[in-house]
Image (cartoon, rainbow, N blue to C red):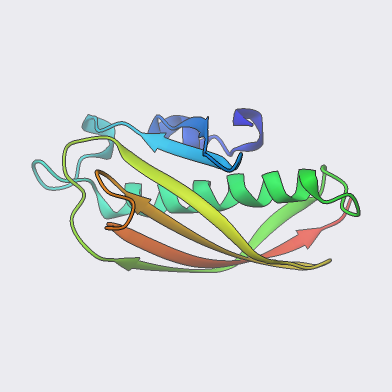
Length: 133
């Protein structure tokens, strides 16, 4: 699964685990490279985590979709991020949910949280174009 993520995931220090339902769960450790104001995550790092979580979820869904070749390229059309609270100096988790997987367009939601999944620090909605090879 890590090979399917863009190089930016490595820059953020992301690791990929498997959620309870088998979908990818991304973990971003707190470190100097993701620091914003002292003691808090940078908003760009949170947005990057959300985008990587959406890409991981979409790649997972494409691999599971029998009618879609796993080598299909995905291109972002738009990204909307809602920041709800500051990310503190602890690991941050991200998970994407594919809400629609069509033949040319996919809609994905992603959430980021720290201690409690029911209290996200940010959420995003993204649309992707699926380019067949």
